[in-house]
Length: 314
Length: 146
Image (cartoon, rainbow over all chains, first blue to last red):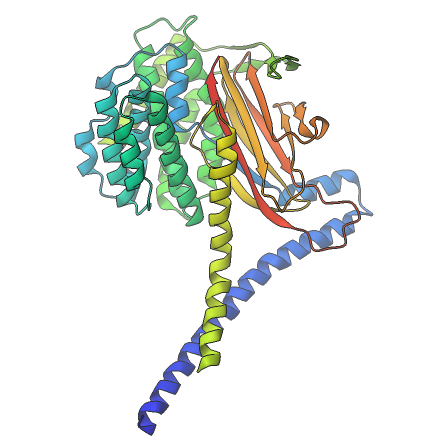
């Protein structure tokens, strides 16, 4: 090797090493900040020995990890079915719309919407419709670079069990798990939240459309719609955690508008008593609850959900 | 030059390690915790995190009447028993697996829909002088019709 060339290579290696050292140093600084925070927390814990219980509790609470679990598309569809919902294909977002979704926001929202539609169709044994929705959901997942959501072996298992509803639902559940865990691994929690919000809005849309022409009295679908008041605060908290994501912030504003109507509904919850069956070991949480939903609040909710959902699929 | 390559290899390992732990956590959640939910249908949601002994996590979720639920809280093998408590909106403790020999799952149903809080803790062994262990903890939900 010519001396001059060797020198250049050494220089390049040197540069690489310097750059790597810098990068690792920065990584270490970042790790140290986290550790420092942890260490600070332990210091806090040590200091607490001489502090009051209340102080300590407050300090410990600041380091607690908090998660909010939104109903998944499959759970949303199951809740609808259990409430006596019927199947109405006209309520689904047509699969032909998928070509319209080219931004990350529209792809994420409609991946959630299609996931709820496929779950709803599968629970009512609409095999071909379910397959069509799985296909478009896969395309949107690919568009969002969510890897291996539905791989070759899953597709094969799907084809082999096309008439087995339980297996199809299990595959959908696995697909949702793959998608959300992948996004979490990649630090894309806000995208996972937007997908879930899309699915939640679609479930609410199907429910409100099915219940619209019925009486709100003693109506299980309406009861399930009222129950969504519990989830809307979780959605707001989750979206608030994604301040750096403008897409999440845009969705947050939509959800806040919807919350204004949910806030008009008051739910009164009685005290819980847990009773466990000694044979089955299943515990029943016994309690009463009531709410003050009126027809006008319900109509307002139906209109707002329809506007929101239509804006997401258009 | 060899030292440089070694340096790069170590650096790569350091960078990839946290991601690898997360991937292991996902595999653990899928292969151990989700499977244990049967005959309940897993809802498709993923809640798993690396927790250190002594650390607590809280999860909030809405549960609906007329549905049977199974909550599964699974800790990876390197952790001791994982404690979990279920609390209602008034912070009333409805279940604590500490009094059930650290059972990993709880089956229940509700007469009225409500939001519940699941508090998960990885207890520290008493008088432990060693570095606290870190491991994957997954919280999973299954449901079925009544």
